Length: 297
Image (cartoon, rainbow, N blue to C red; front, side, top):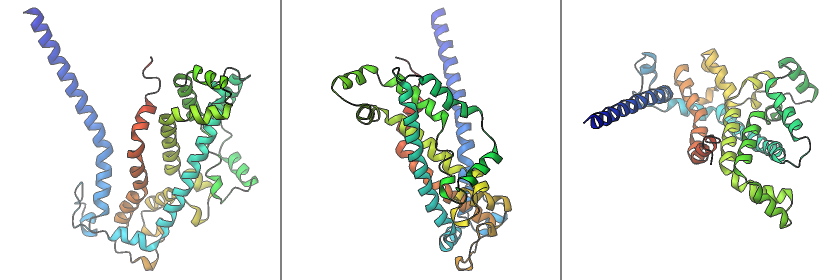
C-alpha cells in the first residue's frame, strides 16, 4: 500500500508539473503570436474600427485598401524586391566566409590554427566604433551602395564558432582519412563529404544570416541616403517613428484611403511575410542545428 501510495503521489506530482510547464509554454507562445495576430487584424480592418480602438484579434469590416495602396505606390514593393535580393547575396557570401573560416580551423595539421581562431574571435568582443567604421566605408567608396550593407557584416565569429563545433562533433576524421587515401583533395572532401553532411547547420546559419540582415536597419540609416537603396526595414522604422503615412512617401496615384495606423500595420505584415514563408521549409534543419552539443554519443 505504501508503494502504491508513493507511486500514486509520484504520478500526480509529475502530472501537475507537466500541466505547469504546458501553461508556461502556452503563455510564452501567446506573447509571440497575439501581437502578430493583432497587427494582421488591424491591417485588414476599416479605418473607423481601427480609430475607435475596437480591433483586437479579429478584423472588423474587412478591407484590403491599405495593401492596395502599398502596391499602387510601388515604393515598398521596390524596396521589398531590393531587400530580398540584398539579403540573398548577404546570406550566400556570409555562408561562404563562415565555411572558409570554420573548416580549416578544425584540422590539426593546420599550423597556428588556434592563433587564427583567436584572431577571428577577437572581433566578437572588440570593434573600432561607429565613427571609424563610417570613415572606413567612406574611404573605400562604399557609401550609398548595396555592398556597404553586405561586406561589413557578412562574417560572424559567433556563427563561425557554431559551424566549427558542428564539424568537430559530427564529421569523423576517419571519413576524411579514407578520402585522402583514395586521392581526394581538400576541396573535394569539403564539397563531396563535409557539406552534404552539414545540411542542418548550413540551414540554421543561413537562417541566422538571412533574418539578421532582413531585420537590420541601423547600418542603412548611417550609410545610405539614397531612397532607392534603403531596405524595407529602414522605411518601416521611419514610418513608425514619424507616425505618419508621409514617411513612406505614397504618391497621389496610390489613392491612399487608409489611415496611417492601418498603413503601418499593413506595412509590418508586408515586411514580415517573406521570413514567415521561408521558415517552414527549413524548420526541420533548424531544429537539428540548434541541438548541437545537446546530446553526446
